[in-house]
Amino acid sequence: MAKKIKIMHNSSTFADMETESDNVGALRSELSLSSGDTVNVNGTVASDNTSLEEDAFVAVVSNNKTGG
Image (cartoon, rainbow, N blue to C red; front, side, top):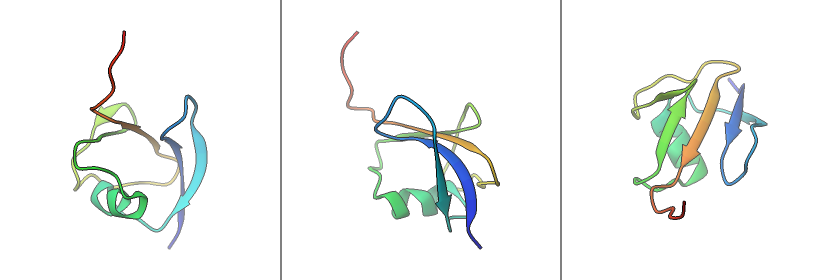
């Protein structure tokens, strides 16, 4: 069943998204995320087994970013 989450991926703000994914691992597949990307759920670094709940805040951070 689809659930709504708030996601920040390739942007500077959170956006509404509907997903069928039940956990971070499934979301990685759905969004074709790199294994090097870090995923935070509700402000905490998440493993692939972390559950995704309705209205969760999900931020994807690419580890290949540089700058300062």
